[in-house]
Image (cartoon, rainbow, N blue to C red; front, side, top):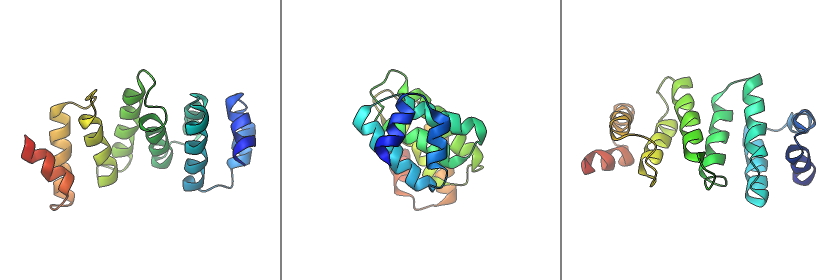
Length: 145
């Protein structure tokens, strides 16, 4: 599937790509898009996810977009800032109740660009500990402060 799907996405044929991926789970779609992005590094992989988000906003698609921008496409100018948008939307869509998405904000504080401020990272770590008092990443962050 990846070759044909990649061809559709690279050429901007998103409707055909959507038809091809319609039956895939979010996990399967994520795997396909990550594999393609590692092979061709095209921004159209991100544009495809954005086209899906326009139709139906959900945390799974925002997480896919986040992962694309911080892993295979992180070298692009502004990639971490785009990832920040998706990380914040994941946190908002889960009402700040999911540590996985909160941890993405801490990650964006630890990268060299530090796209998350010290204050937001501190608040995020505190929120994480309110959900799980033993969460190691949050404890380590607060200990360094």
